[in-house]
Image 1 (cartoon, rainbow, N blue to C red):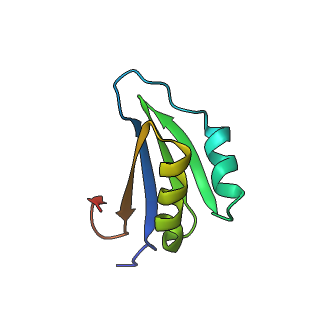
Image 2: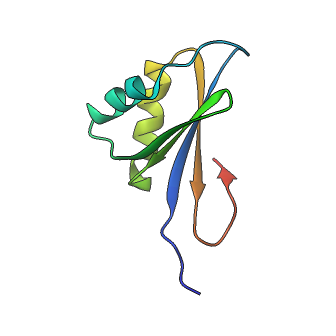
Length: 88
């Protein structure tokens, strides 16, 4: 079977239930100004899912967002073509 390339997803949730999250455009600006390539930004329930074009940039992206969003939790998840999501 053909293996899909790995993909990294950043899952952003508020630290306190009901706390507001920034809009996708703010997140896009913070990452884009630091050269992070973004595949998509999707609001989902009370969280935001950011898919990165390059898995190698996940550590930097997580750091940038953790600093820019002090009231949010940012979890990086690697998704590869053969196995389910793994929290890192």
